[in-house]
Structures are given as structure tokens and as C-alpha cells.
Image (cartoon, rainbow, N blue to C red; front, top):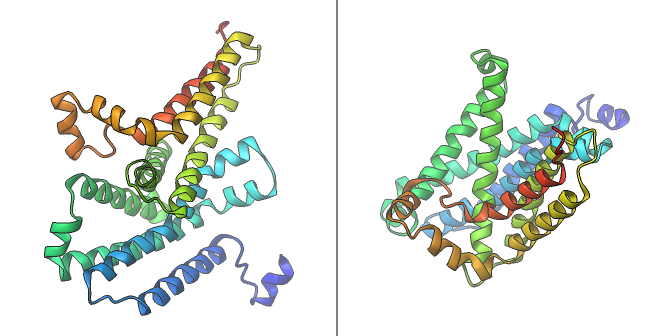
Length: 289
């Protein structure tokens, strides 16, 4: 590693700012190459670039979500590297999302009719705008000039909430791609399951940290394992239950109204992870507390 850093003038491209500049260069080069082969004079071309930029952003937010959990559950060289460089991977995610913001701006200004007739949807707009608000706030507070306005608790709350929200957006999109639309692509499966396991790792890491000193009853552990398995089954079978569950959850008028403007409501993509969380909690539940 040291020798390689010296070959690059003492600049370590595998860590911290070196890693950020490397990732940013790769992302930006990919964007420029794709733009050169795309007709940006047509709204369909700009729409393609919006989707293309997201595909580059998604792996970075998943890695950021999984970083601390991997170190908790599987301590080793790679998890330590991932945790050490989490900030810079997050900033690389911001670069990819910056490209997406550029294309969205181009779409909304140059092709307004197409944007509002074919793309714009209030809840999607709220989810996307809220995500960008979180992203900007997190980038600014990743540096001293921004973080000085927050205490440690506020900083942690902002970044934890922001990471969850930014993870939830692509995860839910790919869940719907698999469980609503008729022609999912292999990339939809990859990004859905990658996002699922990234967050599931956080749930298991949470359970590992709260493991009691005394052994929970075997029956509770067995029940917990069963519920965890049920959660995985729910995650894999959304195509079969999505329509019925969505209809049931939005049957009340107030729920149907919330669906129009509350991000992610009624949370169908996340039900499986909630079930797994319940299973992990029961698995680590000590009745002597």
C-alpha cells in the first residue's frame, strides 16, 4: 500500500481523500461517456441519464449503511477499511447524486411539459426533495465549518436519519420494480437484495450489541429464528402479497390520503425488515431483566 501510494506521488488512492477523488473521477468519467452516447436533446435521453446516475450512487449508500454493522458482526481488514472510509464513500455518493440533480434540473427546465406530464408525482417529488435536503445537510456537517453548529447528539441524529432516508429511497424503488412491474431487470434484483442485506446487517448488529449476559430461553430463541426466517420469506415473496396488503393498508380514507404525500407510506417495502427486527429482538430477549 505504501509503495503504491509513493508511485502516485505519495497520494494514497485507496483511503480517505484519495479514495474520494478516485471514485469521483470514475463516476464523472462514466457520466461523460454515457452522455456522449445519449441524445440529450430529447427528454427520454435526459430521463435515461437520471436513472443512469442513480445506478452509480446506489452502491455507495449501501456500503455506508452496512459499514458499522460489518465491523460489529465480522471484524476484519475489509470492515475496518470500510468504516475508516465511510465518510469518503458517502461523499462519493453525493457526487453521483449531484450528477442526478443536474439532469433533473435540465429535465424540469428544458422539458417542463414532459416532466410534469410523464415524470412528476407529488410523493416522488417529496421523497426526492427531502433526500436532497438531508444530503446537503450531511455533506455540510461532514466538515468542521458545518459540524460546529451541532452538538454530538444532533450530529448523530442528522446523519443516522439521513442515511436511513437515503437508503430507503433506492431500496423502495427497486422493491416496487420487482413486486409491481411485470418486467424486472437483473439490476433490480441486485440492488434490491443488496439494500435488503445492508439494512438487515444493521438489525443483526443491533441484536448483537444488546445480547444479554444470561442465556434467553430456548423457546424464545427458536421463536426468534422462526420469525427471522418468516421475514426473509416476506422479502422474497412480495410479488404475491403486495397488491392485497397495499389494498388493505390504504383502505381507510386517511391512509389513502397519506399515501399521496407521505414518503414511503404505507411502508410495504420495509415490512420484511420489521419482521426480522422483531425476530432479532425476541432472539435476544432476556426475561430476567
